[in-house]
Length: 146
Image (cartoon, rainbow, N blue to C red):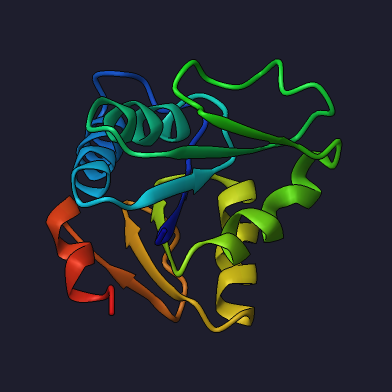
């Protein structure tokens, strides 16, 4: 199964552009048979999992705690790490490409790891970092998946 990493803001609200983008992205990925891996919590992570799950896709949350109690309700498979933010390299290493949607310092660290690992990083309303390819709609990612 092919896996796409999605990273981004844990504070994105349901009616925000970022949440809607991630939700639509999840629906597209789920419909096309991709699994989604993310940090498993709320905001962008919840949105992408929700969209993917509604289309029958597999959702994977790499959780910061040992219990996974903070997982959003759309996570199918919880990987409980007990690592907090140190889980970030695992999230981005798991996917064949990385899509960053908004975000703060945690997302910035994931972008950095992605680029260190040589991953293609696509960004929507995220950090302006050399190497991040800006996209404007969820469908744009399919130009970068080989």
